[in-house]
Image (cartoon, rainbow, N blue to C red; front, side, top):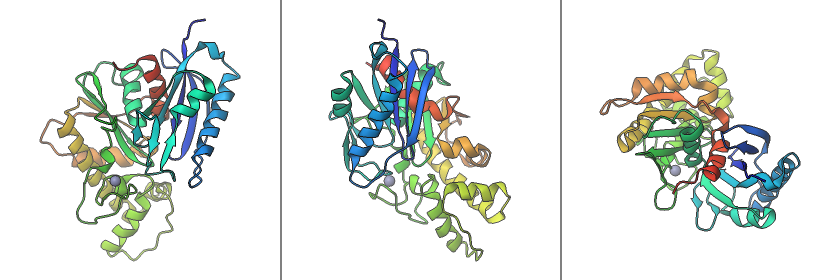
Length: 311
Ligand SMILES: [Zn+2]
């Protein structure tokens, strides 16, 4: 039987997705649940992944599966096949490759989610015709995948795209969820950290009005209701996003920046124009577009790495 399908797993900070994907990038079946986040119990994450994959295998013959690709929103150790100190999950190290290989007896690979997503854009999405482009996600965290001179840029430990930890501010000096520094992009503009930044920003602007904001969605709902303070806050977010993206432009000289992640996909009219307005013009700005693969970019990426491994 021809091995013409891949199993893809997308381990996000919020959602856990698994799907059966065909060679031309079609998701044939997909299941989704919340990512288990119980402190120091990474086994629960593995067992949930196994349940999702088993549900998929009820619909498709295991003999058709070439392998399992797992994309994860975290730094990884590719040699050990582990997730390492994920900034948005309450675990230290989580072995992924070993337990899945043992359980399903098939090849398993792990990749950073943005590395996977940029590979999906290369094979199935907006990067087919480009030799130099970047996939940038703004979701619970911020990260990038980079195609440089037609190759996947992975870096020494396959963590080359951790651009969410670019230092983009020295005014507010906010801590970062990575706990390894201050002023990191992710600590300001990610979905998880935007509410805290709003609190600090309101104080620094001496704005007395009280806001019961718990999530970034609350912020965008207020902005869509034309709240003046919140719209000014999003201008500040736009400036900071533009600093991060300006750094990406001078570092990688991309032809296109493909943007994804829930914050961008759900609120692009409030995010993209402010970035374009504030971007540094040292180099000619690249095209900035929204990912045509939308919320499936990382899942498709995990499959694309199984079908089309980078040599
Ligand atoms: Zn950081």
